[in-house]
Amino acid sequence: MTNDTNQIAQNRIPEAPLRTLTPDGFVHGLIAFIALAMLLGLPGNVLVVLVHRRIKTPTATDWVVFYLASCDICSLVVCGPSYILKMTKLWNNFMPSFLCSFHFTILHTCFIASTCLITVVAVVRRSVMNTNREPISARTSKLIGPIVIFVSIGLGSPSFILTKNTPSGFCYYDNQKAQLQTIVYGVYLLIILISNAITCACYVSIIPKLRNAARVAPTDSDIINTAFVRIRRAAIKATICLALVSVVFFFSTAAPLTVVTVLNASNHNVGVVVNTLTFFFSRLYFINTFANPLIYFWINNGFRQRVRSMFQRNRVT
Image (cartoon, rainbow, N blue to C red; front, side, top):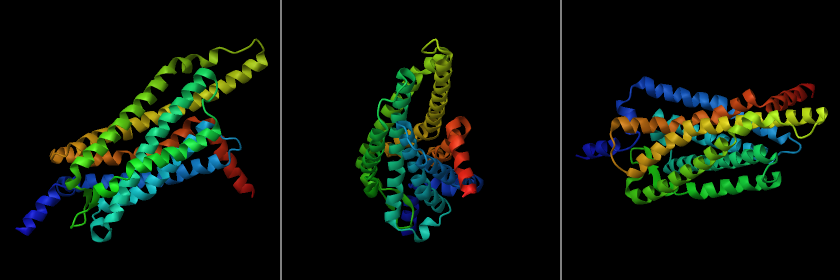
């Protein structure tokens, strides 16, 4: 009777369907995907941080990108190994319950912080394209980042009481706190919807500017016009780069986690297939953690030049 009870309890855990009914090849594929994300994302985001430190006069956009990379590093360092341990069932053998709570706290904190920072950078780029200047100073942006992260820690902290290890070692959400879980995930969903709506509105509103910005110069002087067009094109590329970061974030993180949030907040047994999809979607956000540095290097000429300059200096020294 006790064994049957334990089996029923384990089957209600969101990760149990993936462990028991999903083909091993799928599980191994997810593990390989997370390992690849760590392999690409950690050095990529560390490179973004190092490049930022070498900028003599960072802009407001530079500071937001710096904090975004910092959040991705934190997420990869903490959540990447945790997911691999849970998927290989090593977590059940020796990992304490407080690390389960810590894992989900970091996961939610980094997600909320990244969501808000991407919205901030969208507002900044909209102002750059419309008025040729950033709406906030670099000093203000430097302070906004820690404030966003601090608030995100507060919003992610309920995970300390919402998640724990089961007697058998599974790391999952505590069903006994279902009502609080519904409230918390409702807040997360509201943040997701508002932030992404603002981000989308900002970038949609500047699409005409992206098409026509370099066609009109401010004066009749060829020298000034050339400089203006060059600066304007650089601003356009930077904006397109960050807009692409937002698109990747939406499809790899915001949209999947919105589905996961709704399912978790419903507190219903939605079946094996949906539980497996939930498990998959909750890992899909790792795409965002390694895609951002690749996007910067692909589109942003300034970032590529700073990377080359950094490595050339290291060779000389």
